[in-house]
Image (cartoon, rainbow, N blue to C red; front, top):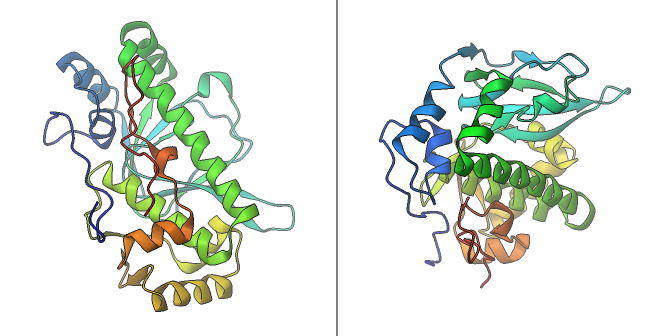
Length: 267
């Protein structure tokens, strides 16, 4: 691994105009034409969500599964005292309410962080995947586990990492996730989060975020310039943030040796 490069995994043969979901699942598994067609056609019912528009309300019925096709979305909870905590950032290729069949009421709210395109998928289409396409069903299970892994890592950050470490860990996580759907380069990526929103993700005040980002910049661990995130010294950044990329490992339908493309990254 080059010092200034972490993402950059090879992809399976998939159509150039494939949706982010197909690009993500097709990285490690050569999907059949029928599987690709099914994944694409189930996304035909789409909605455009304006920046700042709330489209999922905490406690309201959740009747469809949402799939982010374009843009960034945040999922969050509002405490009785009015404090917002962002519990997840959904990027292109991410599901929201994947298991709507088992939970009819939303336990969070969701708002478009940018102008976004969302596919509205009927629950029966998800069930049909499990009946007809075992590889795709495994892919959905993998996405569920991956989602749980991300939440677990955020919990570790909140309880065991310093402010600078948790922010850097989060920035590295976003880099890999965006690269997996072709939205980041080996140099970095464009971030759509403000310092206030990073604070709401990491349980920090805006002042604390600003100070931590200044430290990361001074120590050449991460820089954000004009909305573009780069990591001048990836090896040191990974070590400082205690970043173990296995929690973002690529999907693999193999029944043999696990695919550890996202294996532990250390110096």
